[in-house]
Image (cartoon, rainbow, N blue to C red):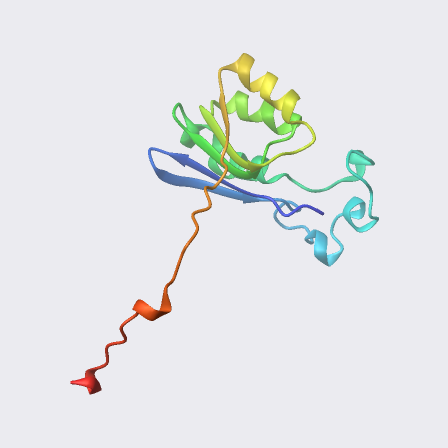
Length: 145
């Protein structure tokens, strides 16, 4: 996988599964030559039939299984899920998806989630400036008495 995406699945404020982009269990990972598509440098959406990789969201959903997900589960992902993953997310009953970075299919994904009643929210961290005034710092040491 060219993109390094991670995912955490949470229910009742407890982590129930994690996932990342890569090949399935037991196969060589992409970086070790496991997926021909990744290693051939194919562009986005090209040669998908030869791709052996799971998306981070798929990986987390498969690790958790439907029994552990249930209503109220929230999926946190650093990139907005693709259309294919969004359909799977709806099927297992995820209530909310929170992501940081946009992806080329955000509009389609948002439409699927809206129709299925899944809340989609982009997390944008607030940057708070920090001011350190060195002239006001006092350094204490046990040797200073």
